[in-house]
Length: 247
Image 1 (tube, one colour):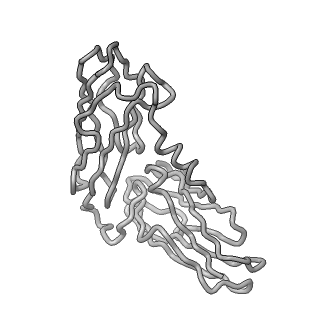
Image 2 (cartoon, helix red, strand yellow; image 1 turned 90 degrees about the vertical axis):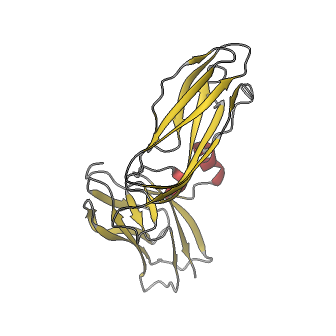
Image 3 (tube, helix red, strand yellow; image 1 turned 180 degrees about the horizontal axis):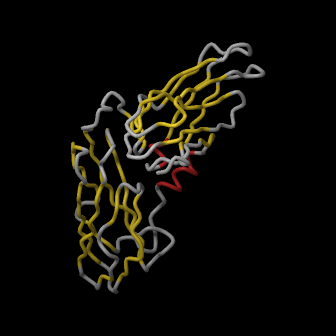
């Protein structure tokens, strides 16, 4: 990740749109073709000091050969290491994956979507890997993680607003990666701004994301919004920051 990498925010992402991107529905035409002994693997608590390698065994219950066309993960930190293959009837296949735990902390849940020749548009099978990563980094006081970015919290509430005073809330952050981050954020809520101090967060450095709000005209109701942070190597559900503005 280079200096030019930025974090930008999009507001008012609908739940259905987010779910369709992160958790597509399984194929109906390929239902029951592949059997898996353990679809959900819970690895418990692990440290972030070394990658985690896991495997799943799939079995072709179909009467014809099935070709695995693609295997996609919900986070780039989870990498498939086994090649695509064609499974003859009653043949088994071992899918292996490696989870990069470096710079991560807290509970996680990642999916592996398997697409086959029976339906290339919808996944034939979904596997899940979950557990909890225990940090060995100096940022244990920042419990939330968005890829290499560590945060003190994922939600802020701005209160006591008026048109003459700028209200501020802080989210403590740290760069747990190996490259500097240039953190920026934009919103569509008038009068709402997010910025980072310092603007360039060096590797291993700490700072603050500052949420500021000063409306030109007082809102008629409380504002609830979800910001999806872009530019961070993490699934969309883990890149949410909830912002509540109370009148």
